[in-house]
Length: 381
Image (cartoon, rainbow, N blue to C red):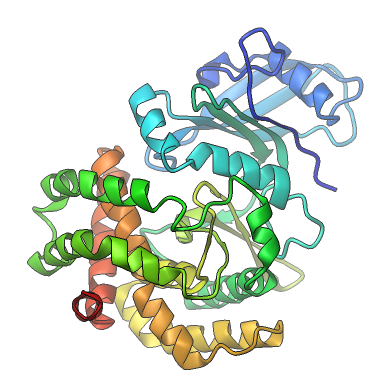
């Protein structure tokens, strides 16, 4: 059973207040937290070693591994915890509030991750705190350090891609056209946030061009500009497609793999942009960003076949393989929107960040051309 606590408003005198920085997480604070949520009964935390995650792995906040020492042994007490704090930059934090990133992830770990039938492995949540007034957030999650993390720079192997796509099909099929998705106020649809999304995209477009224009092809820049004009109509069209629970940033950097008894498994994290949206958007996101251009071209048809077969096996009807191919092509608007905004807003100044940005845009640009996305925009207009 997953144990977690989510507080939607915290004040400084609350024993579960949100520390401003990772180094402000003290042994006393963590002891109170783990006792409050029932992880600890007797033991106390006496020391914490904070190991920051390398720059370039968590662009939207502060992340670290907490190595914990207790005054006594206790069953179930984690030896380490993954800690994720909101950005220390108030300006970035306020920008991200507009699209509800921290509120959304807190809601996901409160309402969805603990469900016994949730069909996708995720890190066990110990604690999720969100402050509506300041936009600050803190997550304490299961440490996946023993797993094999995906890497967008190298991309997924063909074998892992099959594991991932099948798991994605199980998730989407489970929530396919499910009316109860609307019960969670934090789970936004694309139309719920259309005005903010359009404003952010158009607002970040000049900064995206300034930062990335020197290594992008004229074709990508032309597509990004054209999309800015068509985006309102594009979002309206998304409502007509079957809706499900989507991850929204489904790429190799947000996946962890492990092999047990000969079976390959994937755990998915970073649920900040989970949405009620067409499932093929996740598929397009993964295929266009997490596989090399040559690999995607060689395996895309078989991966789409696997995804569609998974949907059908789980009871999804009235949705053809041709519907899927069309929706995946249209779904390339998802990574295009996300990475124009991210490229303009976030810090990619580290060596890995710069390499990642170039790699993602090379792959995405090829996918946009292969699927004739610009022609689709012309037809939409």
